[in-house]
Length: 362
Ligand code: ADP
Image 1 (cartoon, rainbow, N blue to C red):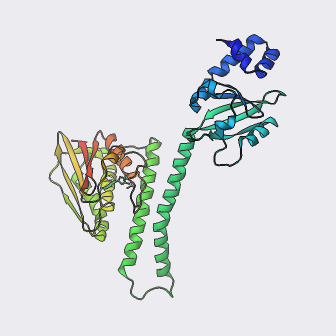
Image 2: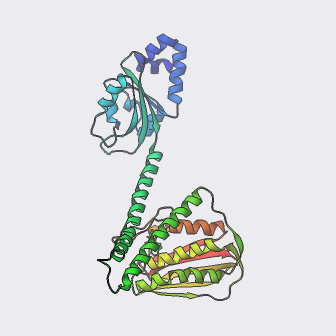
Image 3: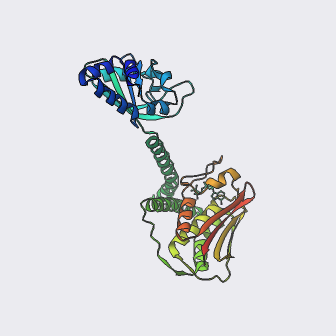
């Protein structure tokens, strides 16, 4: 390496280092700093950058020579705060500073780092170590979004339940003839919360690797009928025609309750995303050594560009009149079906309805 030349660039710090530990060791240290996977910058109190290693230059997307001599504030800033980087450097000179810094710049490039600035000896020069934490940030954001969504989606039906039960339990407000709609609203809201919590529990089970299948020879037709029966009331209430067509099927080895969850999720979605007057048809059959369950609806359908991502965790298709949901149902269904050695497919077009088909080895 051309240690001498680079050393000169970092004067007076490297010079000072050379005086303290000797030229050779200073060169080794310089080499180590440059090779580090974490970002390293040496910055004057004024913010002027004297040294930057390759990892940091790459993360900032700017070549090393274009960084040296510029101000740190041109590249990083305190995220979500109007305070300038000067506050950070002032605090660091008094001892050390630790916190998150985001990328700054006219086209506001991405990136967030957990940074520690420490004063070098008695000098007014600081060394900053930058650790990429974009992934942690993205995950925190996802978790925060998910939490706010799930609390909102639980709060709405819970408000309905509490409102109506309050009406029914207070002697003064209790209607003499209870309108049947009240109980229906309560049941519907309870079912929404139940579906949400079940999906949430399933996902944490999957994530913890605790999805255990209790495989036995099952009557898949019976499982389908059972799952559909449980949703018959919701379909009726929404004004949808829900039907099942199931012929004799070969034996399937599967976990009965998990398969009921899969069919329940698919039929539940078909009901949720189909407007009044529509139809949901569930059929079972055979295809190339597989037993199939197809759930067909006449609902809103799904745009082609969304289809490849539909089974991803938290994935939801944006719509104007926000339908409640977590984006977990299809992810769970796919995980369960694939754990059985099967497949799940979708065919859909906006306005033309959707067909979700489960294929299980016969
Ligand atoms: P959720 O319904 O809770 O949002 P899912 O994972 O079950 O989550 O579904 C993911 C997304 O796929 C839904 O948000 C919806 O946009 C779309 N989707 C699923 N099933 C259907 C269907 N039968 N018709 C139209 N869109 C659907």
